[in-house]
Image 1 (tube, rainbow, N blue to C red):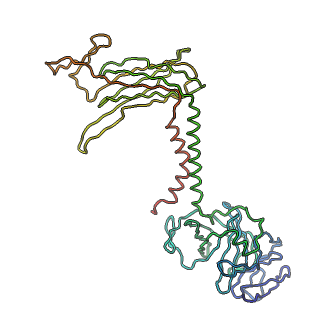
Image 2: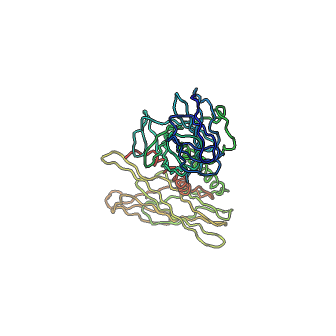
Image 3: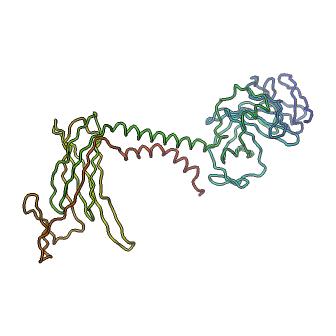
Length: 427
């Protein structure tokens, strides 16, 4: 290390050492906090302020070894932004290795190296030495306190626009003023490594962290995790609230093309104040047919009816692309907020064919007996009707998948939008 040179503060008369003689331009008095310009031999006073500057994690003049190099803390800054609060920056000096930065944001330490080879700018990221760094938030950093010596002119109130570009835990910090733009590579340091090198005041651990110096993508995994936990909790609560589960079953044969008919599926007792009721209908012998299902839940005590609708439709065919299918042989109808009581469940249903053949007529000859008259078939003008068998299961309780996925969309919307914004392709 070179021998420091001493100057006298014109504001308080204190003796101040200049450790980086020949490089230092600005010097902050450790006794009264005055900022001095030492570029001239007369040490002209720029601005004096009497408030003592004591609250730094490392005092200027401290020496310590990091990365096998002995560094001396020759300057300290306290900076502030509206987004991130306060943080501290320490200027390190070694006559053979030059300058480095040590940054304390909350309980996080970072080691900074000024870049001589500038990154290549893109709309949403920059490239540097073969790596891509995603752009984070920008903020205005204001210098609040200056202590020690620096190789450029600096004063309280100076402002710079700071933008962080992240790649894993590594950060490229770009700070711009009206006169210049500086880039710094920041890598994380363990608190134990800094404490072993310098005498660190522990009272500063836990202060507000500077977001621009952090990896801005670290919050996304946690946001997605919280959203997933919340969605699973919603599903569990919905499942528990839908209980107890009571069911009734029945089977009906529906004649294709006949007028709609009414039948009773069964009886259900709703035991909670309000509960879901789920009605499932499944048919195994339907093809190019659809079945209209109009349900009515009639309260035995009040005779009030709760109506709902279901539809089974299943189609097949062949076109230029080959065979195709559409629809399903089953349908599930969820009825929400059914009040407590005993309900008779009725079905008004009808089955229909596609495509319709106008030469085919479905005719009822006796109660519950139907025939099909085909005018085009002279040898056998009467034939048994086509019947579709449908199995019905009605249960109290149920899971509202529509509500579940809507809540899931709302929970994941914010982290999903942030992820898309940060990782979308450059224009």
